[in-house]
Image (tube, rainbow, N blue to C red):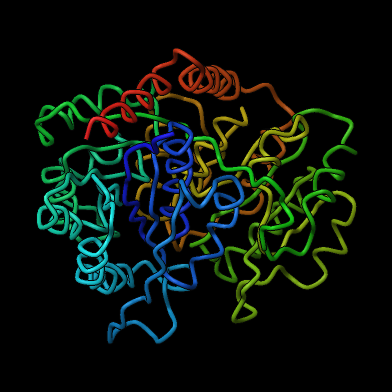
Length: 427
């Protein structure tokens, strides 16, 4: 049997960009394409789930050393333990893979027919693709609403690399969004007409998260195993009674923020799960002393990785206090929970404005990277989010249904994914 078209997958080495890129890769492989994923050594473990699902004849890895770059400490290969200010340096370092990739391509017996890379932070792949005479297609880890806002303003104040935005949209042969037309269609049309000037735009989301064939093959450092987390949720007798709190892989709360949040959770009297980062370099990011004892039985504190998708889909969970990064937002939408938004940087503000201010499917509780919420007010919001039938929750359930319909057979995202595979196969 002839294998499908060979695609080079070039994800950016940041968890929030890499994981949805791998989710997309999984769907392309299910569409009978073949792929080579470019990865650096310290990011390799993130591929364990997808490697457990596909044969080496369909999925190959190209492991390249992360290039050295003076402003970046030796051994750093991603942004997980660094500030967003380090992003331009990571981008610059990663671009040094250009020449090694040219050498690999020229020596490959059956080289790729296209590159799918990060729309913003791997814009150097446009030059690479041009040199190799193959198309480059950008994958956006943020939605079209955010991208259109950045294009209108010329830059994002946090990323502060405006040239990347225009280069990614104007020079890429196509753009793939992890979103759905029912939510983002108007903004995709704007991007197509005003910037892209072509019709190779696809909304293929929400992309389902990869489920490893055997979860035991996936190394995920966590203080509480997944089965224990789910068992705790199963023990909750009241549906929609638990608040889930999580701020993604990049956000680390300050001491003041952590204390305010802990105080709010304690005062609210709600049942909750709170995920905190495990790699803590100082006491500033640790939960207050004695807090866990005081909320024992009512609250679960997970240090490290949390089974976020499973938590948000559980019947016991009713609301989600989140930074509103796009990946987490999509998971919240699919879980049908009420989003309590605390945007801090980058696309968080755009997502919150869209969902809370424009669509009425979320509630903004705080805003800003250094902002500290009033613990009493936040406690009231947390309690209200699981004890009262709010109109935002009803609207959130409607949005969830739109998302589910989009990815079903015959739905808008399902059709777009089929068309993407067809377009790539034709190359």
